[in-house]
Length: 107
Image (tube, one colour):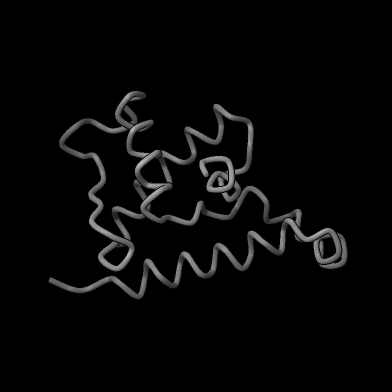
């Protein structure tokens, strides 16, 4: 079975870097970073995933057999990452915040 650890770590680093850039009052207007606000994914870690999974189950975002798997960020594969982002889409829409900032709201 292929290992996807670098995918999960790379995604998380990428999302944190760009997410913090969006929040920076100097960088945001200088580079038009607000254009990316609704494009970024929520960075996945144990805390965020635990809350996403609880929400996803109560909202029945996926049928039980198709619910995303999670062991750790090191073992995250692209399919399960995408499914967690789908749950984040639903949650962020309900809360009225961009998906890329959802991790801040969940802590």
